[in-house]
Length: 339
Image (cartoon, rainbow, N blue to C red):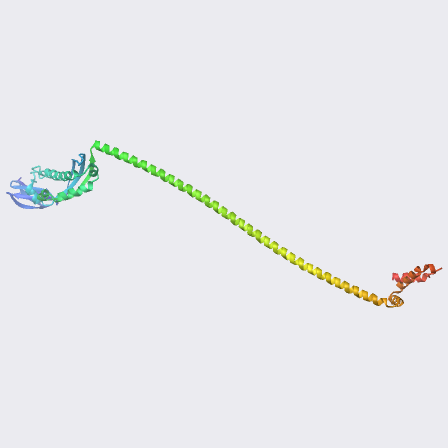
């Protein structure tokens, strides 16, 4: 009664029930009752299995490196694996009766190590330290063509190299070399930066000199333009002064012509008047003086006639003995003159 047991597997476990040496049932995720006295159970995990590894190999220049990585695989054909390795469960249904499940991981890891050794031996140290991707591709190709994995029904899912490290002594030597290289690159960078700074400073000075030359050229051009403007202004002023002087000369010439013409006219008028007077005098000279005197007296007023009479009397005073002038006459003359 106590030999009847129950087992239940998950979907990533391929369970096989052997009864009297024959397979009674098999598959993923089976659950059933069985009689333990004549039944053997084989449980093969079909999910992805991770197997980390770390190995030491030598490069072509006899330098030791340590490779650390991980392989991921799955049992794609559990029937083939069950025929080659023992995955029989113990009576507790939790452990195996043999160590084959652990040996499977070691066998696959050894295959990876063999593939890595075959490829690392072809590379020198520097190339090997930087060949992680190439090594992964080569190892994957090697495992995909491996007859061992095909016989066991193993399918490779992934392979990765997490680290490739040299020995501590080699690492320090490489670090020293890299350090020197970095220092050299730093010196080169400083040198290049200084050269760039000097070049920039030279360009700045050249720009300053070019700017100063351009400013001087512009100032010279402005001075020339100013001189030309002053020259043009003076030329225009001189031209205006010359035009004014020419106008004045022309006016003076016209004035001289006018003066000459006026003088000629006055001379002609004087000549005419002199001729007229001469002719008049010539005509009067032929008239009797008594007539002329009578004509002159005819145009005189009484006072003038009286004055003329007194003048003649005065001119002949030596011939006059005594002259009496009536007061009435003087009063009349004075009264007329007052009126």
